[in-house]
Length: 314
Length: 197
Image (cartoon, rainbow over all chains, first blue to last red; front, side):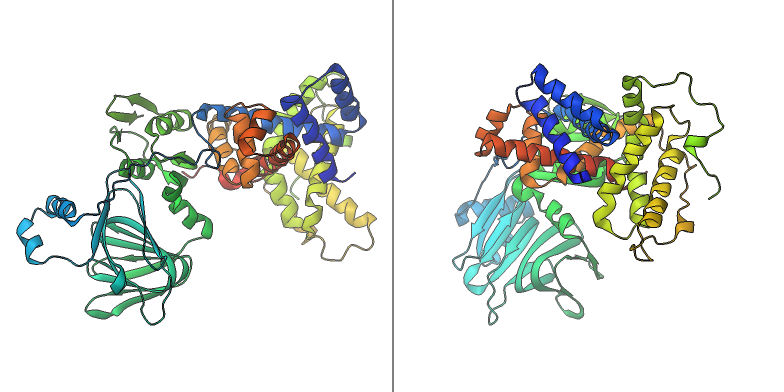
């Protein structure tokens, strides 16, 4: 018997014992098989040990497999009327006068903290807004402006009319594309998932980068740098579209910052907390308490739930 | 090789008693040998060209290790496992005349740093949940769903079948596939998943 056959048989026994009916006759059958060779024994013990270790996953009891219940809490708050949108902009910029003098083009959409929103344009293109995000879209002109936050663009290509996304003094010109734009203070990040796109700085033709899939461009006031990320990594970064955060050797500090982007209930790192310890795993985006419990288990930190916040200390 | 370990003819005193109790043998195998799987797989991949044979080789190494340990638990599990693997590769080449000359990259290079101390046990324990999560993330989607429903939610086979909208037989298939993939990832890739400082 090949190793694959032996392992398959060992797994069958283990599955039957764990999930099915298990009689004395079954146990006798297993014992006989195990005694036939050391190879059988090794295969069974190996699978059994890992399967038992997997029991620790029950620590994540409230973790729902995404495929079974694809229902992350969504607080969608589309703002479709200009009047309301204006109020939001005023609040955001604090300059009401400026707004009325230069009424910006396009329809404005925004999401609150923890929100997510999909906007489908008439040509089938889609713009998906992440938490705490504000965009304007002028579909007929094939233009959009990201004023704050993060958005995922799936653009139906039209060679004659490229779709242009403006962020501050940078523009992303779609050449048939799926891409993510994340606007942070002083920093713009554009990740290309599919197709091609060009990132350029206004008034400075020299500052231009053409992206192919997997490329991540980071633009600051002075330069645009491009790095490559794996498909898996990009998929992780887009976890918010499925309501999850995926960490891959992410430091505690960065993981906490990510959670705080989405939730009213903030996680606070006390002085001396081991913020450089790294984590691997996938979490529901809105379950701050679960994250706290896992951090406590895995990183051996102290986690105190104080109602309106979660404090992590050494 | 700096050191050779010939476990069957070792002059060193073995642990007392002739035959190991099965429970002790199992405990030793699970605690001392299985955590070396990442190292073993690295060694096999480094030194054997035909990747389709790796699973068989791993299985044979484990069988030989268990068989030998029945006579007495080896003192240095890491050296013991790697030496067993090395001898197995050499045997394979000797007994199989049609093996291409480059089946093994370079037998003299089979010297792996077997005396390096492994991560201490507390670090391993702390890493278990993290590594499990990472391994779970890498499972095929249907197997992952079935494994999570079983191991996290504690659902029965029938409940899992209802949740996934498949037959109970299909659930069994997903679970067994998940068990095997989980073991391969969790044990075999542990080195890569080890915590970064």
